[in-house]
Length: 245
Length: 245
Image (cartoon, rainbow over all chains, first blue to last red; front, side, top):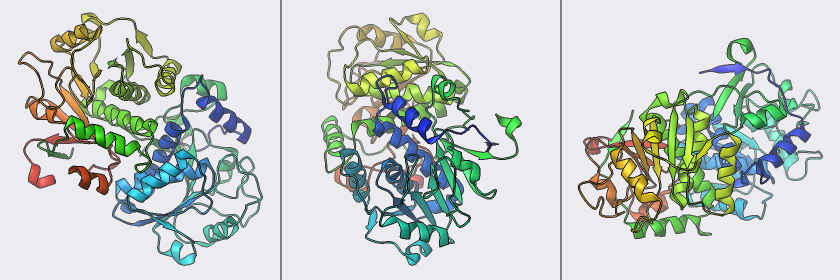
């Protein structure tokens, strides 16, 4: 697998919000449906690359937050189901908008189970956990019922993949204390945020967003890595920056 | 590459329209943006599988019709650009809807050229041609300026990929005469239509639509083949039905 430098240029939370708005402005031409579809596809591909054996019917717990980060998780769950995994969803604070209601309907039509609650045994019985609770617009405090979920993420031995930001982390500054949740893998969307500089050396780091134009990359000073073949993600590593970028 | 039986169950044009409507009804939960994104991604992947060398900056001419089939082509052009090809677009009858205007804007932002006209030399100077003129709701007659384009498709030596239906063919009955346009490759979306039974033996046939639920497959009596890895397309062949389905 192609791996490129982990130490990439990062987007601040405010720049990430501006970039997102620009993509969806008339001058950008994207709808949120399109961007969320591509984001969720990237997440599903990263989780598959992390552990291909998930496709053999293994349970993937998808933790879905109330905003767009959660929507990315819902799309990822659909794609993982079609890849052969068995997603189960925890989505306690639902967004009552057509896009989100539609994503839930799609999952119901695939007979994907929605859980009323999660606990240690839900995590233990899953082969992988996707953290799509909070994204680049996260601001503390963490509201109910999510504090308990963050504790479960901290304690679990099950591999975890975070979408864009490890939930509970400050988007720009990273974990607030030494006891913070540490994902096994992070999928940065469009570009890494400052928080990603604080990943453990053992954490795998993927970048998704194979739709960034040169104009956007230049304007926001982004590095666009070389994706391989048909992949919608590329894995970033710490030690071969010059070779690949 | 995994190849499955070409002789699959086919959808009639009326069933295809009903299935499309059902996916986008509240009970299906899909938006047209999502379905078109996945359709265009499938087409781009099929074209890439047909000729990986296109990703080395080769020109791909995308012929875009006035309806949703054309929208699939616009999405495919974007993905092919990110794969490394150089799409050029002929889109003479534009649909003035936000989705379509947005797709055009996305292509402008990638510096993709829109042509005012096409002729033999446009075809000759392209390494591949995508026919996304007419889809499963096509009814004759072929309106201006498309008759000339169909003639160019008939005559060209450049490899051609048709989206869902070879343009000018009857959706259920296939080509109207022995002199009809014959694509080099067809990408059937969701399920093959009756026209696909009339492909030449040499024509490659891909199926895209890795989002079909078991409920939909059962209701419409569709065969859902095994997609390989992360692929959004699967190639169908004529001679190993029992082995793979």
